[in-house]
Image 1 (cartoon, rainbow, N blue to C red):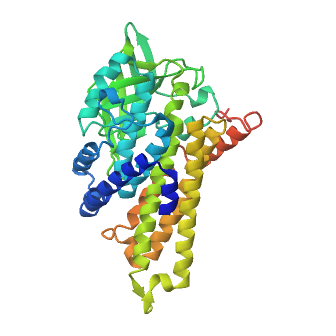
Image 2 (cartoon, rainbow, N blue to C red):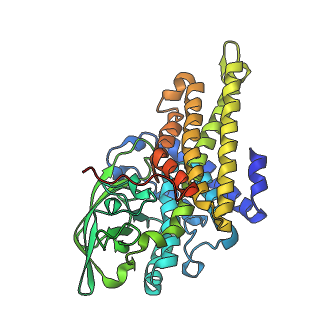
Image 3 (cartoon, rainbow, N blue to C red):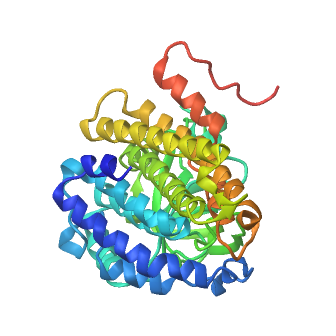
Length: 414
């Protein structure tokens, strides 16, 4: 596996990878094991990761995608997507919750660098770059509209229930967002809302930059998830929330302009998923070569060896498809959209199987909270549902392959 990874990376990327791997091995993994009980504390504020964010800040990984002129870490544009995928995998190998926190900074920063007015970039990017605790959030999902928003059907029924109305030189926003990564802790949100009702999601949706302390924005609750629990997922309510006119990032066609975020976003999700799978495999590979059962180490039992062989094959297959999707995105090929969804879909299903094998090969230890292996399966389970469910991803793949003949969105019941 190591040889496959090495072949994909430049010398500079390998140096970055080694730095991040050292941080994960020396700081992240020990932190997670030491604080395994805090993961289950139902008071979100008691699940701290500030020291890990500080560590990520110290090695420059927090600042990826923040423009260098504002204090960010520079990336080669030609291999930017590959680098972010590599970093996502390595961080997630230590903890997928930390990877979720950082990935939102990277992805939202990428979006702001492309669509935010210059004066907003000058105001916010230095604050983001300088403060290790500064988290960003991308608020799209709603209680009555989640994965169907990812369908490639531009119909009124799929539009945001959150609405923004222009009043003088202000926008007034009302609605609710749910299942939002970093939603409970973020200091700055990119929020999507309907501005042209009935126009279709790609023609009537606008995006807004909203600071946490804006009047009318309320963080309603922390969603207590099965995995990734060192990232606090949140629910946000907007009640006559007013923002200045210039805080509208993209008016009416925000979903189209967000393409700069969505495709690399699928890559990042698949890479984070792969990181969880790699962690599960590495832990299992060590265990089966050390633990004795039936008078011999586990790996000498053929049933165990068969599972180890299946795990590494699945991981290599996920990596191969992910790399193909990365190449397509960086080359801007016509099949990039389909490949990104295929990589995300394939990773979510196969990595979950890898983590199931990990739990089962650890026997009774596999389901003990203090042992730490069950965490891999819990973390992997989230990827079946995030950035579109498995079935929605399949719909998108077919739509990308057969845009003129694939089925149409059914719409509401009559």
